Amino acid sequence: MIHLILGGARSGKSRHAETLAKASNKKVIYIATAQAFDDEMHVRISHHQNSRPKHWQTLETPIKLAETLTKWGDDDSVLLVDCLTLWLSNLLLAGDDVFESESQAFLDVLATYQGELILVSNETGLGVVPMGELSRRFVDESGFLHQKLAQIADEVVFCVAGLPMMLKSAK
Image 1 (cartoon, rainbow, N blue to C red):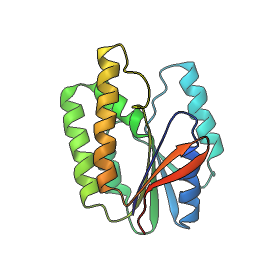
Image 2 (cartoon, rainbow, N blue to C red):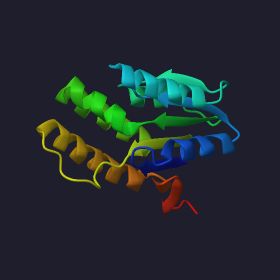
Image 3 (cartoon, rainbow, N blue to C red):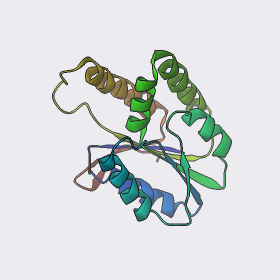
Image 4 (cartoon, rainbow, N blue to C red):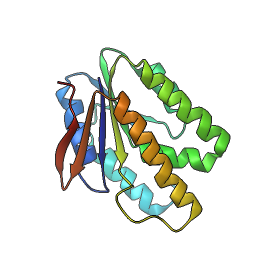
């Protein structure tokens, strides 16, 4: 089962994802994609780390997401990836070759993924078109990625103001 949870900043998407992970009654493996390049990001990462149950295993995976899913996914665990837009940023900053190979590898893994997977991502396409070239590419690429993931995922949820809204149901 693949869950895709979308929403804006501070929309409740991570909380919803963590609630789903707890409800699975499986071992939770939290795959964190953020990198702390400044003090503010250190604070954000610490907040997320401190809010998670201590018995959850955390894997720091800024780039090699497909490899991590392949290595750690099994029937006894639920993998929670938070978040895909930070991962996408990491790929874009790593260059076109890394972006192309890693994003395709991720989609390839998902096409045959058998375990339980919760994917969290920021919906960035609801605002104004950004001014800079890299920012516009980021918004475009995240939109393309979300469309592909919504087709693959069994369940898609959009969170606003802490309220999860079902867009696609597995039932």
